[in-house]
Amino acid sequence: MKSVARAGVAAIAAASAIGLFAAPVAAQSASPSVAAFYRGKDIRLQIGTPVAGGYDTYGRFFARHLPKFLPGSPGVIVQNVPGAAGVNMANSLYFQQPKDGTVIGSGAGSIATAALFGGQGARYDARNFIWIGSLNAEVGLVISYKTSPVKTAKDLFEKELIVGGSGATDGNVIFPNTMNNVLGTKFRVIPGYKGTATITVAMERGEIQGMGSWHYSSIMTAKPSWLADGTINILVQLALQRHPKLPDVPTVLELARTDEERAVIELVFAQQDMGRPVFAPPGIPAERAAALRAAFDAMVVDADVLREADRMQLEINQPMPGAGINALIERLHAKPPEAVKRAAEAIARAS
Image (tube, rainbow, N blue to C red; front, side, top):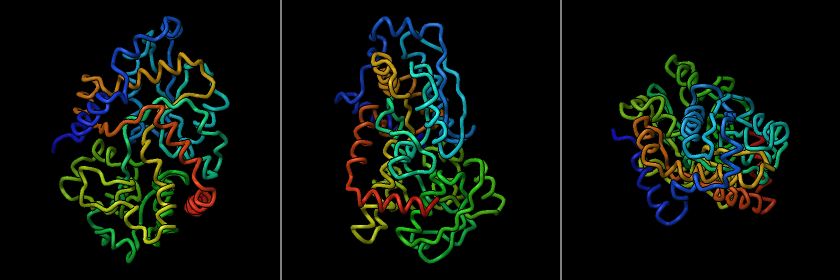
């Protein structure tokens, strides 16, 4: 199987051509004071998930390449700060960490919508973070293990599927329960696993039958053979558009039966478009924020970076620049209050 990153390379090249991303030299043309500030320092990248999962892999990939593109070439130290699907880390970044560009965060797109939907413990306003960029638009998949009687999307409405989940605010708990509440599917979610790595082991042991949200890019990193050899059945794409590699698998939006269901589903799953964001606390100096964004923009069009992603089978699919994340978050906050309320209620019942 060809690496799925290759399709992303073409998309990124096209995006660069129309000016969505800065040219690779942009990061190095920042103010000399930025280089002077970062030279000899370390940046701490806090990843809001445990070690060894997909978010951790992408976060460490970003950390490894950032020094090449940021003036002053600082070191990057990775810290895993799991808890509440990254909300704990985001709270700390917003209120407690230095606001000078030496501490940044990485995690799930749900961090950007948790407070909007009244997520437990989310005390920040996502509109105030400095959004640096997202390495890909994420496509979560509902999957069942090969021994499960649930083989298709239609089966989800007729048969129970026992799926493993992490914390109460993780997508692999929130998303299947939201589908139960809004669409009437029959997931039974077993939470408490430490991450996708332990959930996959539980599937192999027969403790559970599948997963209610597992990112396509994570599967390609951790278990690519499972897609090729039929170890898992792909039932639904948790995205608003079908992934080009999965043209025959329906999206969750396609399962909605009414306009009301579609409105709620769209709000809940829009966060997938900013699948793996990197962000900084509010209030960091403007020139450092600009340098971090320029470094990201240069990174996602760099040939060496894309070749390494290809070798690692890391999908760089429709990366979103920081300004794009800001615009998406603003659009979500501008949705009608009643629609936001219905989405928030669906998520609250899911947690």
